[in-house]
Image (tube, rainbow, N blue to C red; front, side, top):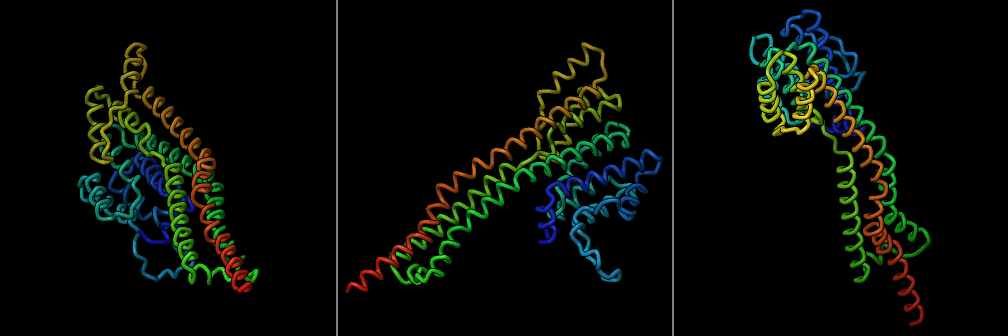
Length: 339
């Protein structure tokens, strides 16, 4: 993955999911309009885009039109799917092969591959299935953006506080104390330097781990329910639909499935005589809302949890790198002057 693409994904946590959602929506519209799947993939791959293509958003807009541009990993996957559809081959297999060859591609391609495979095997209408999946992906993209916004303040505060030991070190030098000389030329100062750097490193790692755990989100939240709804919209039985959904999740997402909510929804539909697919989609929506609330709660709690590395790592580093050298310089200077 290029450094530019990594910066783009950090700047907009929902960009990669939103881009795949855009591809899915365009496929759904084209298929609903009667465009064959082979042509639909070709139009999505080369047609005008209302939003940046996956992985391409960070490129320079003013680049010369004749300048050769290496395709992004996500564009390679689009090209592989287009070629497979044009040749009449399995699009899902092509996506999986391209994902294996392009480790920098968006992981959300696996969700699209799983939905496409379930719809194709069950004989479900692809356009309606992809339209439903696009809504799922848009929800996930918005969740990532909301969580990223909530994390921005605590993360910026953590970075600012982590810089305090270095600021204190420079401030001591500006006051005329040889704090740098003490840290590198005095045995006690060397010990303070080693311990201070160790505390800073531990605090930075701790901060990153807390932020990473708070920003974790699941594109597969409620996915088994969605896949089951796609399969059942073709008229397939519950057992066959569940088998297709679970096989797709194991194959493309390395998840075993087994959502306990499925049994309750199926039993409710049987008792009430209601359409199972619609109830499954409603339950999937509820699961996604619960995952969104959980993610926002983790982000809100991050500001409190960051107090732990601040108190246990950053403040000791501040004392060791900023205060201790100052005190050692004053004491050695006083003793030297007295002698």
